[in-house]
Structures are given as structure tokens and as C-alpha cells.
Length: 110
Image 1 (tube, one colour):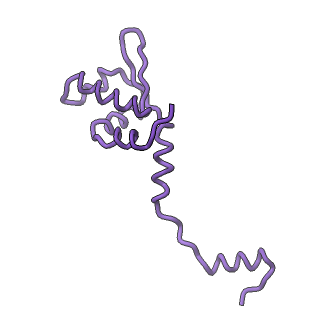
Image 2: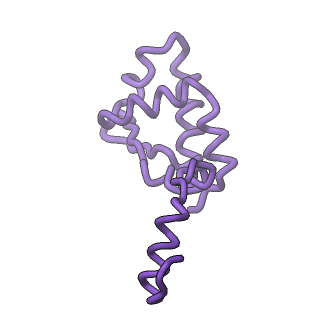
């Protein structure tokens, strides 16, 4: 399943969902444990989890009677690669580059 960047960024736009992802960095968690630090209903947390799962950022698995959430870090790779395109590039030292080319091409610099 391929999820587009819009879906991923939409899921990441909400601070509650970002906090849930941060919590899941530590380990898999039961839905009730995910909900514990938030002052909202279990149904509201479930909606957040559904959005995260739809974006491929988490997976959910039923173990006995308990529903567990697991972070899927590979889902962020596409977004990360896209964002890196806007990062700062290393400044090019033109003098060093010219010397390198001269050495590689057998020319002597002026």
C-alpha cells in the first residue's frame, strides 16, 4: 500500500497524533495506554489512531482482548526524503573544486 505525502502530512499536522507517535517510539502500546495521558475520550483517541494507521504511520494488532499499536517508521521515509530536498546544502569551495579538477584532468591551476 502506497500512501501519498498529503495523507502523511495531514496525519502529522495534529499535535495529539505527533505526541502519540513520540510515545510509540519507546515501544508498542495498548490503545488504553496510548489514551491515558490525554484528556479526551477513548473514542477520540481511536479516531486519531485510525488516521495514523490510514497514513501507514502505525499498525494495529489485536492480541487477545487488547488492541496494540506499533510505530511504522519506514512510512516516514518518503516524507523525509522529500523534506531533505529543502535542506541546506554544503557550501561548495570553488577553489578546492578547481584544484581537484586540475589534478584529475592533469592540468595545472593558473
